[in-house]
Image (cartoon, rainbow, N blue to C red; front, side, top):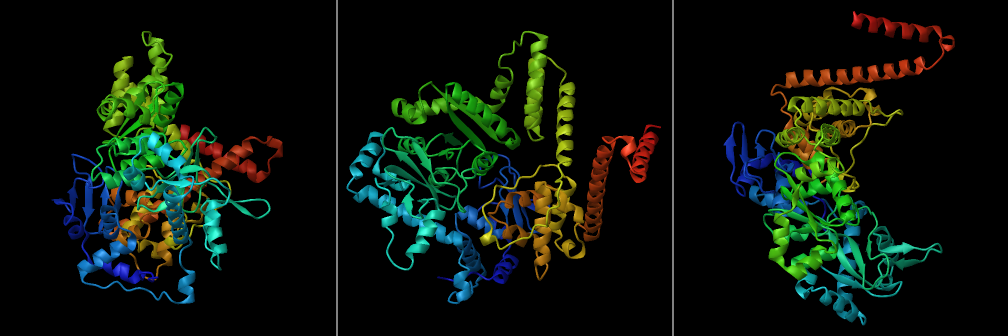
Length: 618
């Protein structure tokens, strides 16, 4: 096995190559001020929102959120893994990629556990595919797939397999020998084997059609299994594992990207069979969630590849309810340029049955007539309300404004306020003021969400060993902590000259966690790192999107002295904010006590507070 690429060589490559040249060879860039711009290669757009910063050597798309350094761009654009991307850049620079010694005991021990899980899952996928071709019971599985209209080519492209009957078929496929206990442990960790009370194991998937679930790089990370009869549950998915989180992955996304260089829109359906059946009819842009409701992480992942999402639901009451849940989930993700439409099929139909009965053209017509999010929002808010009365219109406003408030600031939000004003006849300035009040109350509540117990400072670890946590998301506003993160990314040397106040350990927000993590990582480096190196270190991790957002959306001072003063001022303001919060908590606690139970110091504290309030009133 080849050894790891030394970090010093990765840093050297990033210093030698020019990101403008790297990207311009693949995407035509245009000089716009100090930066370069283009239409984003990772999603469809007419107005350029893709920006390349030659000074800090990173790119960012304001439309889909893609961002990173030269290595990250090569990985995403050419669908390469990290070593292959480094090899590609090294060949341009005329360098040979060195490798750390791989035959040492320490190096063998450092082989990532996650890579072992990927290898085990790949083996299991091949095993299931082999059973579909060779097992004595294969006829039942093949007949089922044929009856659903699936061709051998589609089954091959999606890696569909078969788990035969029996409790230990996968277990018995393991070779005997000293590696067997380790392989059993890996299969258990992957969720493929279940441990019984007596310590024995049995197969999780039995007598089911098997659908491998792949990540963005095409690696098998989990499986879904469908029964061949009416047994329950109809679908069985792999459990959460170190390499699989159903809240983050979408079935069929890798295949959709592989089949389409550009995705005009992505179609989200309910199940695996819907995805593969649509492909059978030439509709190659469908994905499915994995037995869970769509999350904001799912949506952000989709919008990275296309600016439009069409979500397909059954036309019954359950489908309408699911659409309402998705509507509320999607609102914070609806930045300008993004579009979500809701497709309600006739009652009793699903994508598989509809396209089979009516064909691709008829299904495309249904997609064209899907309900836009803005229409469904008003329909949902006005349900059960008679809009021919002023009271009904006021009630619609009361219901719709909290939904509109969740939209990011921008043109789309303004248009929704105008739409509500048009329907209700209310003054748009009044509606905007009420929306702002709702927003301010939420911001105040979020600002006061401070943990009651101290938290230790977060420490960065080797990113190969970092678990795949839920995606870190932060707001668009330039809050003190977001601004501090942006300054650190552009001026990492600030971390060597200043320390975070201890009170930050008690803030439980995503911004505070990210600030602690970034500060800790920079301070552990032996030499000053660059913006490009920092973004590269976190590329592909849960923190990547938030860091790209901070580095790109907030313009930092060009003078280091000004940036340092702002950084110091921010840390001081955070301390003052915490002190005010602590004082208000103390006063609130004292106010609940009888005056006779207060000590002299506590009485003096209340007296001081009352005196300060009186001065403010005067």
